Image 1 (cartoon, rainbow, N blue to C red):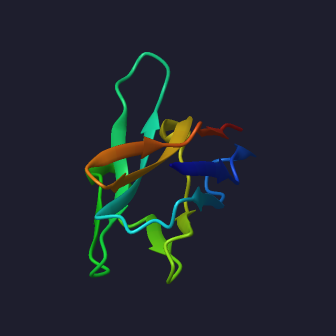
Image 2 (spheres, rainbow, N blue to C red; image 1 turned 30 degrees about the vertical axis):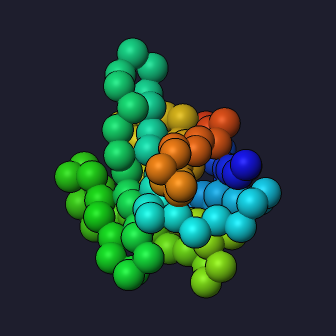
Length: 115
């Protein structure tokens, strides 16, 4: 079993930065992929950023160079650095891991960007 717990969300003004953290606990995680997704009210969940063991990363088109995903060496933590936040970034952000042919999700952390 794997437990993912997000933190770092909050209320910020447009143009501000936030750093989200995802702590993985339980069975030692050796994922094929870890990622951040987000879901805004009335919208489908969408990929924000992903990282694989080689270190390669991918981002949603809307990121436009504003965000950066990283992880620690043991895959016990994944981070999402978000800069130049916009009102459209308001959503619940979820940590995701793909491991042992299963999908694991955290409970989410709320990010609200508003003046």
